[in-house]
Figure 1 (cartoon, rainbow over the protein chains, first blue to last red):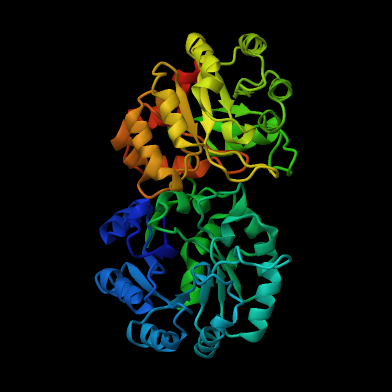
Figure 2 (figure 1 turned 90 degrees about the vertical axis):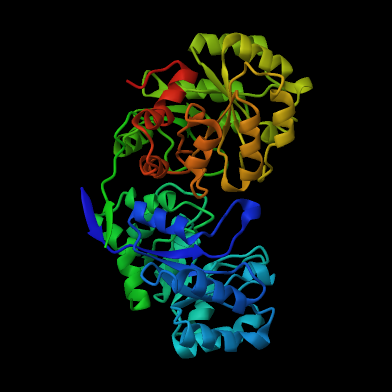
Amino acid sequence: MIESTPIIDFHAHAGNWTNRAFPDNPEVYIKQMDITGVDRTCMNCIWFGDANWANNLVHNRFVSAYPDRFIGVAFVTPHYPEECIYELDRSFDELNFKFLKLYPDYYGQSSDADGYKPIFEWANQKEIPIMCHGRYGTDAPGTTQLKRYEKFTKDYPKIKWVIAHAGGGTELDSVKTAKELPNIWLETCGSGNPLNAVSYAVNHGLSDRLLFGSDMPIMDYRNQIAKVITADISRDDKKKILGLNAIKLLNL
Amino acid sequence: MGKVDLNFMPNVPVFDANAALGRRHDKRVNVDTVEGTIAEMDRTGVTKALVYAPHGAAYDSTEGNQILLETIGNNDRLIPQFCANPTFDKIDDFSKSVNSANVKTIRIFPPLHNYPFAEWVVGEWLDWAESENIAVWIPVNYETNWHGALDIDPTQLHDTLKNRPNVNVIISEIKYADFPWIMPLIRSLPNISVEISRWVIIDGIQRLINAIGDQRILFGSRFPDSPMSPQLYNLHHNDLSDSSLKDICAGNTERLTGVKVS
């Protein structure tokens, strides 16, 4: 039975990565969105050293060209700290982006490095949600997501944190982190696809804080949305994860 | 408002070409029994599954294959696939066990078992596979707690299989990062098929069909590490013809295994 429900993709990328055969043609996105029923996709661009260029690409190629289908997500790089606050102000005040995506792997340091402090302080003051990975190759032994985000949520209590790729896994660490900390959301996309990942998080009481994401154009909408649609959970929980939670989080 | 079927089930018979059955040494898997596997197959509309024993991959093919047969018992929805190690197993004994169990496919693990997929290592086994019409599954990688993410060498695959046009080889668990080499490989060698449990690259199904048609693509799930449904959902939303959908979901695996799904 076909049903109507809002569907928001929380995690997709702009910018070509053709060395990996990942094109960012908006028409390809829209075609797949129409096939899968996705109403709107949150677009970030993390593949440029120049955040100004990256955010303009998101805005010009996607958001302003198809305002009903794409939502802008800002990016800044702590490699250029002198540019961050200006770019954040511009992204949210002028481009009307809805949240911030950070990618510490490119920085070569995890998200608790000092270079992120001004960014977090700005986001805390403005109450801007941040999506970020939970773990990094540079993590010190013994690092856990819970420890990391305990500090983040204490130091920056007005930020709503979205752990990218975490809701798609059965890792105790990410689910435990979200259970312990009410300001944590988990996003579902990933190339791996652990059995019962979504239902595991739902069964731990997180149905209101799971967000469907695709990771387009690295991955196909159809595979990623199917993780939610075919999960062994209630229809109401599927609807929350597919879009209702994102609408609430971003005040859409 | 998005239109979506929240109760998706496949509308064609399904033969899962990539599932494991049984316990692993390095972790407790989500499902390790016949009952649990069948329950997931029922929930997701999978008719039959080709299953191998994780023990056969990680430690010993003979014992693993024996465990597999004992675990399956007389369940006719689970089709055994034997693990093999061409550098250790005796081919005559292995051949007897294959014939005795009426097994039609094997799975080998060159990176895990630490040998090159080269004629001077696997030649005798490929002779045997050709003569017995045994299809050979090769996963791109197989991780355990003592073996990391070392992938198979594409050049070895190409150089060895280009001289083996009559051996059916299925490259299993191809993933998005394999795109740069798997596409030219399958275009180059018509005896290679692919199993798509990890193939989530954008427009991945259409890209494969454009490259090699619909007869060399096998639906697989990687159960119990991964669920059975998502790739089925993707296949059902790729505007495939009914015959293409049937072949990818089951027909191509039926042909390679000699087992009909219904």
